[in-house]
Every structure is written in structure tokens, then in C-alpha cells.
Length: 123
Image 1 (tube, one colour):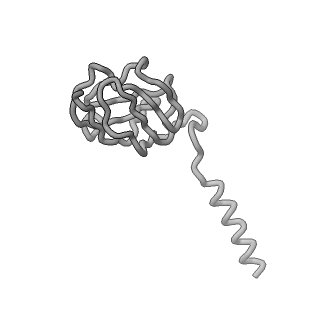
Image 2: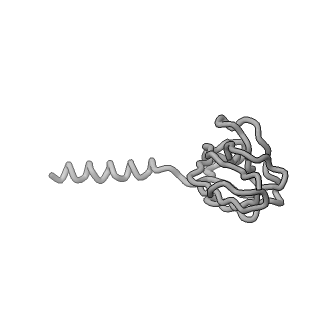
Image 3: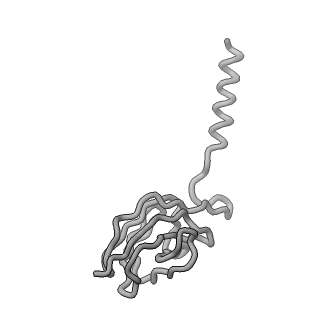
């Protein structure tokens, strides 16, 4: 019984050391993951994006109007960003945004996030 218990303790310690690390570790950046975006918004309205590894306003960019592969669209200007943390971004839809449905992506240090569908209303 003692041998099994000791083996179990060694296994637990080994698994804990394999747990993923958060954020940047020795120059390696995690791929950003989008979890939730607020419902569609009209031009000038606030949008909240939630996720993980979203970086910050100096390392990240917001791409709106892209296709489902993250291609095309346009970058949200930095003056439209209201707040930005590693887990939540709040920005205003630019008045120049095209109305209609598309996809939203976050790019951090050259890594593109998962995408979420998003719609800009024509109002």
C-alpha cells in the first residue's frame, strides 16, 4: 500500500508541473482565445469581448469585419478602445464600420485568436 501511495504522490507532482502557464513565459505567447462578445451593436456603441490571453492595448489589435478564417476586415482604431485587460476588451464600434454580419478577432503579438460572429447594425 505504501508503494502505491508514494507512486500516486509522485504522479500528482508530475502532473502539476505539466499544467499550462498563464500569459507570456520566456518570450512565448499563448494564442488568444475569445469566449464571448456582447450582442451586435450600432455604430458608436460599446462592445465587450471576453476571453483569455488578450494581451493589452500595446500588444494587441482588434479586427472587425473579417471572414470566418480571419481574413479581410479592418482594424479598430486605438482611440475606439475604452479599456483592455488580459481577459476583457471594451471598444466602441467606429462610425465608419460597415453594417452587417461578419467576424471579430483579436491579434496579440502576431497571433490570431479564435473568432466570434458579430454584427454591426445599420442604425
